Image (cartoon, rainbow, N blue to C red):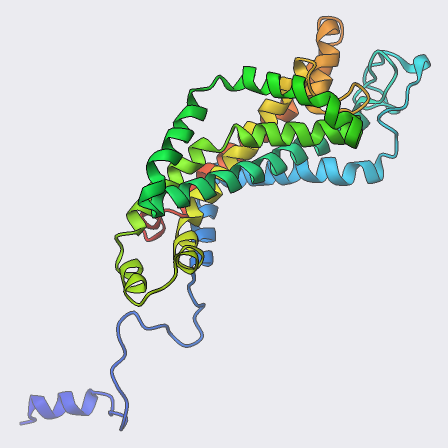
Length: 323
């Protein structure tokens, strides 16, 4: 009769001398290496709304950036013979009351509106991240910086923006020109009044990071505060900063459109989506597409950016990404 133990030993693979048992989570040779970026992108792709929003936003950016290369019509050219035209082959989006091509003005206005959103977001993000990190890391700065943040949150932002634009538009216009001065003024005004939420979010994350083991270990070996913030704190608060960045772009575009719609934005010959709305509101009943088109572009841009931010928030959350 055959011994069962001898049968099991014969069926077992031969042991290789010097080989050690691999842990169960060890990477398999030839398999793709997992990284945080790959995990974030995998989770982001699973968010259908965010992916659709990314496609729409990319299409809008291509439309306003590459469109003028193909559609070579000056958005400021006035042709009284072509006033108030509808949709034609020569003017697919029609013309305004001065005969200016609305397709060309829509492309040029999109460039300005998106540029305002990006630059204003960068200013707000820099201020908010700086205030949040300093407030969360240094205990003695926490109270005064948070009181300053609460003061800005309590201010009526739209009247404050109107006051800043009214006071500084003329001096900056003389120094940098009407368009350059207005652009600098608007992005600085929006950025200076939009950093508070970012500061509070970053402060909360930094307060939690201060009690983590790797921060305490770095402190124990005498790591200077600037190096600690740059090497250990900031890389671990990238997630809320990225989400705040996407939402800040949408807020800045809406704010610029509101200022232009109120007549306090860019000059009349410098188109933006908000300026197109302002120019068309008096003739909205006769030519409704002049309001619908810029309004649709503003809405699509803001909605797509918000959905992208929603997808980034889910993708960068380790509790969701680890599923």
